[in-house]
Length: 64
Image (cartoon, rainbow, N blue to C red):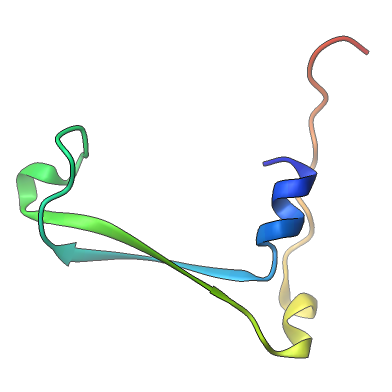
């Protein structure tokens, strides 16, 4: 995750649920008759940032 992506998503709660239905043909859960559903919600409380884990370490790629 890049620093820009982290900044965008850091105040967002992501929930991954398993629900009845059919996933796409390349999905791991497709033969089971269930699929993954991802929901996102922005935090509204002011203290949310205090509960956030530290930003992930960024790795350099390419030439120095």
